[in-house]
Structure formats: structure tokens, C-alpha cells
Amino acid sequence: MKIHYLKPFKHHKLNPILFHTNPSPSRALFSSTPHPNTQPITLNYLQNSIQSSQWHLIKHLAPNLTPSLISTTLYNLHKTPHLVLQFITHIEFHCLDIKTRCLAIAIVARLPSPKPSSQFLKQAIASDIASIGVIFNELALARDTLAIKSSIVFDLLIKACCELKRADDAFKCFDMMKEKGVVPKIETCNDMLSLLSKVNRTQAAWVLYAEMFRLRINSSVYTFNIMINVLCKEGKLKKAKEFIGFMEGLGVKPNVVTYNTIVHGCCSRGKVEAAFMILNAMKAKGVEPDSYTYGSLISGMCKEGKLEEASGLLGKMVDNGLVPTAVTYNALIDGYCNKGNLEMAFSFRDEMIRKGIMPSVSTYNLLIHALFMEAKMSEADDMRKEMGEKGLVPDAITYNILINGYCRCGDVKKAFRLHDEMLTKGIQPTGVTYTSLIYVLSKRNRMKEADDLFERIQHEGVLPDLVMFNALIDGHSANGNMERAFSLLKEMDKMKVPPDEVTYNTLMQGRCREGKVEEARELLNEMKRRGIKPDHISYNTLISGYSRRGDIKDALRVRDEMLSIGFNPTLLTYNALIQGLCKNEEGDHAEELLREMISKGITPDDSTYLSLIEGIGKDGNFVGKGA
Image (cartoon, rainbow, N blue to C red; front, side, top):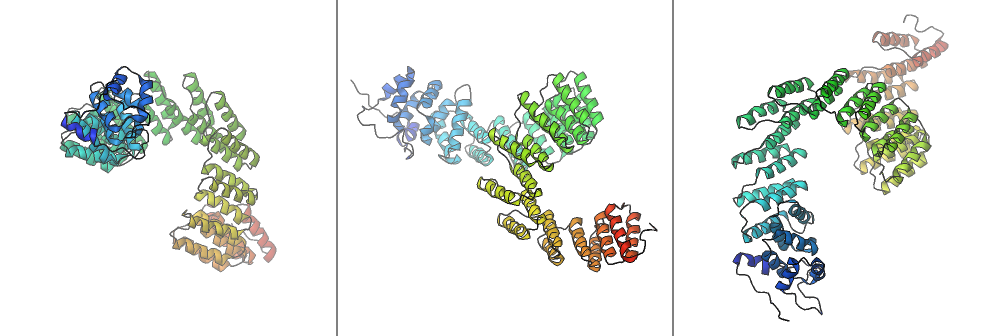
């Protein structure tokens, strides 16, 4: 058989790629050393196999193909990119070195669909086989070799970076394009702007937008829509509205998305009235509002509590022939749930179903949460079962609401049964799940189980947060185990979970229960040193602690300190002081405080009068007769 030995190509630009490619040491598939007991694979043999679509044979030959042979074959077939795509797919693209990959990508980029080349680029970037700068340079070399005049390979590279959310890599490619005198397409710039907007890098978006102007890249309506969204995210609604005039001045007509962006921006910032002005403006310009326009307005009105107006707008929307989405109905359902009007909330759920709009998991979560807030746990659980009957799978939020509900009701068994069901269904419990379970165990004085659960979840990779620590500290404090409560505070510091006023208030209450009010006072000072502002509960805790042991002077001193920083006394403050005064048989002063609290609009409760009655028994005088 005649052997066709590989000869160098005359095309001088190809030489660096074809004959100076160093195989990656990690790439065992394409060794430069032929497999033992095999004849050398010739260029003609390989090309004929590809052109005759002998893909099974190509797969068999793959381990013996050298990088230079693959590169030469790719170049020879560069006018038939569909064959190149098949070839590199069957020899496993991810095993090629970066030079060969970039040559293949540049050829495949000539296909009508950009999807294959985009996919290969994302694989190359994500694999970290080379830095983005190296990938760009190798693509530039392949582009020169293949005499590609367009910017397509660079545009596709930036698009791939954007799809992988690598904004800095996209910027680097953009700058390297400029250095080569290649101007990106407007679609490429829009991809970058869109990514920067999504990740809230608004300043970077404006830098890029200014550079586009410098390069005289004409903005499309999509460009303007992105920048209007950037302005809305920055809270610059007035400038967003002015931007419409700017784009019109450049000959770009705003579309429904342009107006919807501003409407949504206004509604999300509580400026519904301004959103309606935009609605009128778009109608005046002949741009008809769509379902998204009305959905944003309805959502905005629901947040402001204008539920009747929102319901009316829904009717108007339907009359105009527009179909509301599940998101729009969810806004109304959420609004009525927050108002405690479950009847209306469920009526909108029923209306959705009548109109053929399938309630979503979010819809059910809103209703389940509303039932939980009214302690209707049996009905809430029935809703979860209904979800399953309708083919919807409850998510972690669904289970967390129900578990939290049963924990608040003290039903430990039901809460843990739902936790186990989550695991069975492959739904990963969250920190919220475990906080609820730790809370109920603590309230049931089952502190060993609470501690065991706390340790176990950490071994499973769940990091405790502030709320979880506070729940456990509260449990140990309430059960008199202050040593463990303070050890948890040390754990918080070790794990860099900053305590808050709730943490310290709980510890202060624990110390006061022990009668160690001075230590509770020191905790208040420690709060201040750590930059945590004490609240009225902090001061009331100390007042109550001093009053219970009869130190009324210290209690009044804390009351005065509380007043000096702007906290008004509460029912708890007055009750604690009256209790302390009665304990010290100072009925007259207790009577004065009773009159004072009533004059300030604070209604005495059973605890107030119980303290006063106990005071009567001690000094024999009737306290409160002038109240």
C-alpha cells in the first residue's frame, strides 16, 4: 500500500498552528506517539474517512491522531464546516489542546447556527485550559489563518463569557478587540450590557455604553431598553423617562418593552401614580400596553394596599382582550392574604383555574402561608396535598412554612414528619427548616435533642445563622443553662456570626432570672461596646430585674436613661416599676405611675392590677382610687 506522508502546507500563516502545537500533558487521548502495532495514519486516509462519514472508524482512530494531523485536516476541510463539526464531535473536542480547539471553533463559526461554536467556546472557557487572553489570541491566529474578515469569532467569545456570567472576561475580550482595530457588533455589546445590568454592575454598564458611543456603534432599541433598566435599578426614574426623548432624538422608536421597563421601575419603588402617567404616555404614542404592563401596575397597587383598584384594573385588562398571568393573580392573592381576607384570596385562585391559568407553586405557598398565619394548619396541610393532586411539587418554601407552623403550634411529631418527607422527596432542608425544629425542641425543653440536631446539621454542611443561634440560646437561657447559652455566644464569634440585640436581650433576661442583674447590666454595656444598639426590651429587662428584687432606685435610674435616649415607657416598663414599688410598700408612688400611664394612653392589664392588689395587702391602703 502506498503511504501518503504528511507534507507542510504552502500557506505560511498556517504553520504556527499546524507544526508548533504542543500536546497538553493531561491530554492522553491524542498522543504525538503512534499507538504500538499500528501503521501511521495518513492525511488522505483520514480526510477520506471524514468525507465518507465513517464516524465509527474516526472514533476508533482518535487515540492515534496527532495534534498536527488534526490541525492540518481541519484546515483542509475549513470550507465544509459541517464536516469539521462532525469530526471534532467524534474525536472528543474536550481532549484537544487550546490551539486545535480554537482553529476548530473558528471553522465551525461559519455554520448558519452559532450554537455549536458557542457551546465549544463555553467548554473551553469553563475548563480553564487557558486564560481568556490566551483563548482570544489563539482565536485571532486561527482567524488570520482562515482569512476571516468578520468579527464573528470574537463576538461569539464575548457572548460565551456573558452566558457564563464572566463579565470581567468579556470586558478583557472587548478591550483586546479594540487593540486589534476590530469593532464588536451591537448584539455583542448588548449581551455585555444585559449581563452588567443583571449583576447590578451599573457603573460598568455606563462605562461600556460611553465606549460604544466613542466607537460609533449605533445603539438599537434593545440597547436603550437595557440602559433604561439600569437607570431604574439606580432609582433614577426621572432620567429613565428623559431617556425616551434621547432615543427618539437618535431615530430609535421606543417599544412596549421600553415603557414596561419604566412602569415596572416606578411600581417597584412605590411610585404607582408615576407609572400610570407612563401608561398614558405610551398610549398617546400608539404603543399598546400588554399583560406585563398591567401586571406591573396591579402588583404596585397591591403593595400599596389598593386592592379594590387593582381588582378593577384586572377586569379592565381582561376587557381589553389581554390574558393575565399567574404572576398577576399571585400579586392579588398576596395582597388579600396580607390583609387577612382569605375569602378574596381563594376566589382569585378559583378564577385562575376557571380561566385555564394553572396556579403555580408560588400561588399555593402564598395561600398556605396565609392559613399558617391564622393557625389553620390542617387546612394548610390540605393545600399541600392538593398541590400533589394537581401535579405540582411542593418546594422547600412550602415545607418550611408548614414545618414552622407546626413548630409554632408545638406539634413536634408533625414537624419532623414533614422534615423526613422533604428528604424522601429529594428536597434539601434549609437553615430555616432547622431553625424551626430547634425552636420547637427548645420550647418543649428538649435541649439535648436541640443540641444534637444543631451539631448534626453542621456536619452535613449547614451553617448556623443568627436566627438559629438565637433560638438555641433562648432555649438554654429559658431552661436555666446559662453556661451553655454563653458558650453559644462564643461559637457565634468564632464562626463570625455577629450577635444582635435579640441575642443580648435573651442573655440579659437569663441573668435577671438568676437575680444577677449587675451581670445583665454589664451585658448592656457590652452591647454598646460592640456597636449594637439596645432597644426598649433591653431597658425593660433591666428595669424588671431591679424591680423584682426591690431595687427601685436602680430601676428608676434605668427608666430615666431609657427616656434620655428617646425610648418611651411601655406597659412592661410601668408594670415592672409598679411591681417594684408595691414590693417596697410605696403605694403612693405606684398610684402616681398608674395615673401617669393612663394619661399617656397606656391601658393597665391584669398584671398591673395584680401588683396593686398585692400592694394593698402589704400597706393596708387602697391604691388606685383616684385613677
